[in-house]
Image (cartoon, rainbow, N blue to C red; front, side, top):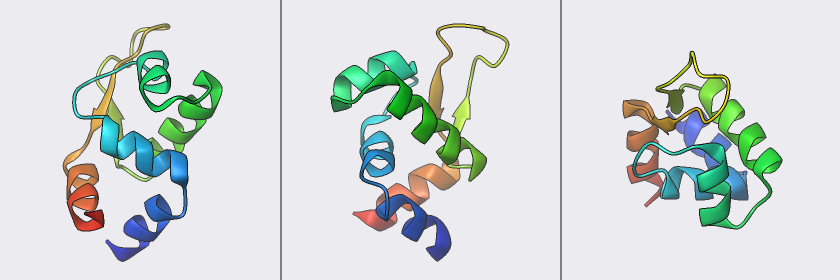
Length: 81
């Protein structure tokens, strides 16, 4: 658990994503919400997904995929405060 907390806290964008992904969102919507480039947001989402903190709820879609926090992602977020 502490390695995941450390991973998220080391990345400013990763932390913003966890804090703002309170409902399923596309990377575009999320990037507008946290004021970053879509490509930056997408890369951070993929790294969070690799760690099991974020999941895609529409994996068969080619565009407009929706992402949400996993249970572990929510737990890490609560530990970060």
